[in-house]
Length: 360
Image (cartoon, rainbow, N blue to C red; front, side, top):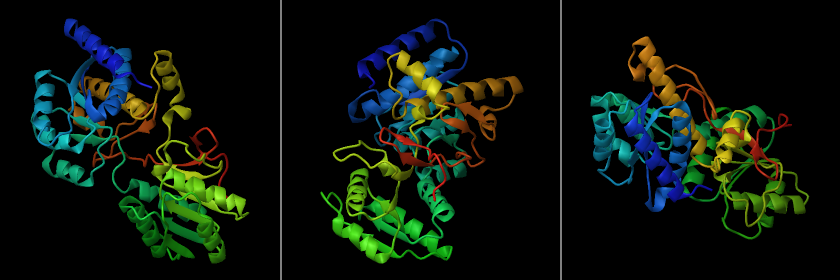
């Protein structure tokens, strides 16, 4: 876990050192430093601060309140500190107000969190220097559709969702894509979430002949379904979405259940070394820690490359591939990730990992 006081002290020390001898690239780190989003802000500060210190660059910490009309003040702080690039930006509200001023100051912004499609559309239309390290709206559904079409097209498929806006919209996107590809689910339904048992549901799935089930719902509902299907001796391959990345309680998830989700980068080969180094310093590489470390690494290397080539920094960010602890990262001309960050993962009792073998 990350200690908020420890992070605040670390940023103060790093900032004081930077004032004494500005070095390398000056990078703004915009994140909440307290309040209800303080823990997420601490994750951003921990990852970015670790990388900036390791690289000998200069960190400028700017508090993010995520309130409406707060972005202009954030931009002013970044401009006054003469940062070359800024990262973090937990909230779209901050970016909406900050980006016009950052454009005027030629300061690119890399968000690790904001997913709004409309925000990026506005940024491209207005020439705002926004780059998104977070997945855009719709990329979760796109990866789920890709996995189902690749692995399940020959099997009887069921689509069920929990009635929430996200669950319904995600499942509807999958259903529409399947039908466009000539596939019709053998069973669709909205289930009642939060139940202690789902025996009736899994029996209905069996009667419909479904062997593959996509669930647009949360982890605990999936855990209940997987347990009840096993108890009833009903063979079901279950796939969930990113909501599966939640606490493994109160009912543990059955090994073998799959999810299309953002990976726990610390569990992957590319993230292991950085995760180990962070833990050695007392920081658990959870949540936004490794993505923020990657953002700081990209910011520093892009600024150095731009200076060496005599090119604008935002031009260097487009099309360049950066090797980071969250994998290879490149931004398209639309300032989005060139590769969908969602992955097919399998629960093995202590974490989600890439499947050991192709689905049968």
